[in-house]
Image (cartoon, rainbow over all chains, first blue to last red; front, top):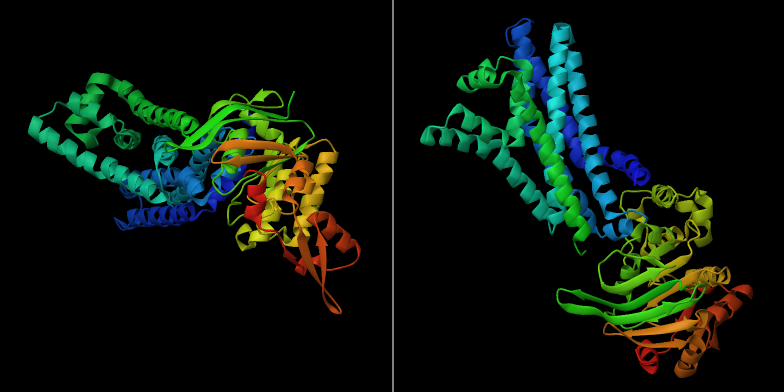
Length: 274
Length: 274
């Protein structure tokens, strides 16, 4: 299994990195992160921590919108496209198991997005170099790690979509709908619930971490502001009640999503009649 | 032990039977022509043997249960699908490299491509190849690693008489080397002489299995080959198309542009119960 998987990943990563979705992502992510970095530095007409935190806030928001979208869309098209183009039969006629094919597609997508994202981060870091201290670099690395967790969760969700979807159109529609729900509607629904039901900070926290995107958002905020003052009452509750322990569910949740969705995708694809 | 053994194999697509209780034994080193009209179940049967699709009943290849040892089975089988599809942007060289890598064999590109006249197309993109060239590429890929069994689904589609002759010659040589060859075709025209056994499928049922010589007696095919010479067209009549084409090539005729009058395909099929 390992050898075949390795071969498939090596072959697939190059193809993924040259796919129009990933190339578009590289260009969009790099240019937007550079723009945010530049605007952050210009913000006060000077350089310094405030300018840097402005740039970081921009990059975090950019991450939270663009990374889940590209991860879900790319993964959700991976197998259904092969099925629709008729190339799936060619792959499955070779000495590969269905599990190896699904795993290779998912890992290849993760690798391609990670490489593309690191490229964007790398260029921003280079641009921000003259205001970065060692501590700032550590923060940037923590945000990058949180981003990777988010990629894993959303590639898992995309993989589940790709094995179920009947067409590329259906896969694309499902992944965009999922992204809109998790990136936009979920947050608004939470705000509404807090106001209508007067939810406690503990309830809000539980509802937030059910969404891998919100979990990643909290993790990124924690990377920049360990006291969680940005979050007001919720941040105060987390730090007071759980100390640093609240970080672990934030790390675990995207991992749980990724693993659960990948396992479900594997199970479905192994048993589906093509 | 048989090369391939099917026992009570059935398959349904959306409730419609595609194969019904098919039992067939294929000896090692033999060649079988699987014939039937469109929709008779030929492609489905080959896909079941490869373990690409699910079925009821049992199939073993060289004693290995296809469901349990699908990967091992596919390692010893070279397969040509009916609708040959590879990634359109991949080059011929990449596809050869991909297949040989997954089959775990080292090959020289020239060795793979030259037998079917594709050596000059190594750098060409698959999307730019004609139907005939794709078919030749699919056959070349199936031969990688010198597999014990060849399953070819309508391999003569889109091929000109010269290429058909080359493929028939390659298959004959493989059988001489002790390999097992199963070819499916909706027409028996020109093919009977090249096989040991003819198996006839109709409406998903295996209705007849007979020796090729027996089938020839029942069909009595007559082919008229019109070949262009310096003095105009000359016509040759034969009951063994490929043998005659080979003879004409040896005589120095250009059979690539030969016009072949084939006996009525449906009538031939009906004569043997198809």
